[in-house]
Amino acid sequence: MKVLVINCGSSSLKYQLIDSESEKVLAKGLCERIGIDGSKLTHKVPGREDYVVETPMPDHRKAVSLVFEALTDADHGVVKTVDEIGAIGHRVLHGGATITESCVVDEHVKKVIRDCFDLGPLHNPANLMGIEACEKVVPGKKNVAVFDTTFGMSLPEKAYYYAIPKEYYDKYGIRRYGFHGTSHMFVSRETIRFGKLDPKNAKVIVCHLGNGASVSASIGGKGVDTSMGLTPLEGLIMGTRSGDIDPAVVQFICNHENKTVDEVLNILNKKSGVLGLSGVSSDFRDVSKAAAEGNHMAQVALDAFRYRVAKYIGAYAAAMNGVDAIAFTAGVGENDAETRAQIVGQYLGYLGAKIDPERNQTRSEQEISADDSKVRLFVIPTNEELAICRETVRLVGEA
Ligand code: ADP
Picture 1 (cartoon, helix red, strand yellow):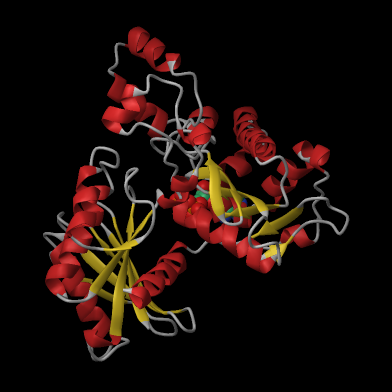
Picture 2: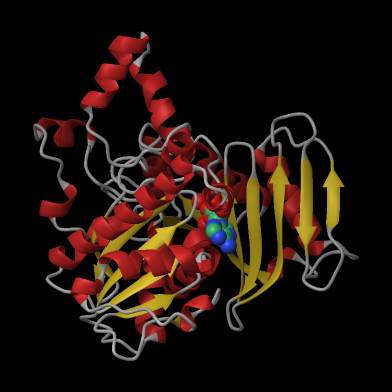
């Protein structure tokens, strides 16, 4: 089956058409500046030149129409008609505590996505617009919603409750949800498959280290803990996010700088992390370069980032009473051998984890532990689109 995977942002739409049997990407692309002047679609087919369409896109419906036109275009398309596309899989940020699995979209699912607008104010409205646009442009085609929060739904109560008055959970659903869920699900299962680990009992820690970063613990591919919380702000130090912080810092800055809570939260989300600490950049390559050139705070930012990852690995090894495998993924996790070597070499010796320096030079799927390592270490490239495609096929096949 050919599956169209769609990921809508407030002014963008990313897509991939994947052949589910071969798991090959047939075409992919991006609509930018939806609802803003200068809208543009860039359509890429492997082995061909990019096809660029510059035309107004006042809303997501127009963007979706243009995507289908590009996919079926006589010169640039990859299918003859939309009938060749079996189903559409949508990335959706937040499903609240009601939706515990990916699902075929119906009125109830759309209502839940709408009810979660305040939990995912930037993403959920855009995700719903993408689904509704597909319903209008290709009526009758099955839409599947794959939620970023699903991985967090299997967490035990002791892991997802915050120790605040329970009424806030009852009234507003305030709890740990976790994000990057599709990536954690994909990479933990892929680690079990690739490493031939016990599919039911393997204890796996996944370090998703990109601009946004999080760590998860899972047993047999089911999430038992994850470092992001009610929002993606909690947990690791990230490109621009502070990660864990004493909440009293917010009050202190508000009082001393005469700022509102929203303004300080904006600082914690967009101006903190390795950017805030180093003052150099949110991009790890720039920060590494500055550190190598002797910039002290750039080095501190990198050290703090790695130290926080190691603390979470230690916490999750304790939470699961052991760990069989640790997998690194996403931009930094897949490409930055130095960060992996530092995390394992400096902090994980007590677990018996040993990295093999040569194997660690990889950027693709590979085991990177030494033969005598007690914990197996892997680089497993994440692929959220493929994960959404697989979920879509699983559900449409069942529907
Ligand atoms: P996101 O999807 O959250 O935007 P990515 O997973 O694409 O993030 O990761 C982006 C980050 O990966 C950037 O900060 C980039 O600097 C970092 N990165 C990519 N390649 C390397 C590398 N070779 N060394 C260090 N960092 C890298």
